[in-house]
Length: 166
Image 1 (cartoon, rainbow, N blue to C red):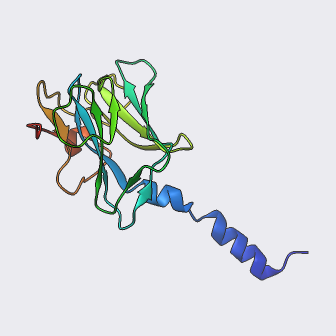
Image 2 (cartoon, rainbow, N blue to C red; image 1 turned 60 degrees about the horizontal axis):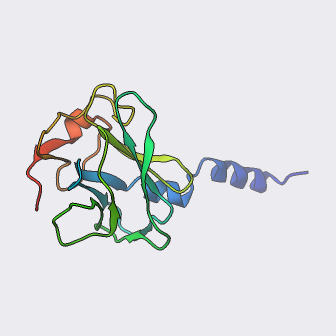
């Protein structure tokens, strides 16, 4: 026989998201520049440091299924309000937290260590990485959110073209 208090506690816990899920939603793909000198800037908009070890970024090309681009090594963290930079081998900037061959595709998908979607951006209408409308294509420029990494789940509204910082 179950005590009434236990049932209420069980029901309350069933509706509470796991701490990783709540905090993971604070990480956004803040800026992307594709190509062999490109980068992906992840921004932690939350108030606590977040362990992103085991998370991955997948590249989307056309309508094909996403393919793995990078996996964050164990111990990788993003401080509150901070950034984590994934760079291609030809990147000319000073910070290189994780280096990959190239930033490929027409969209990027960020997954947590369980494989759940955290965030994504796509700039081609057929990209499986896009959220709602595709972001505007920016040849030679980076795709970026505003300084607060505002996210409405509509890439066209959330991303604009900016000059890369390097």
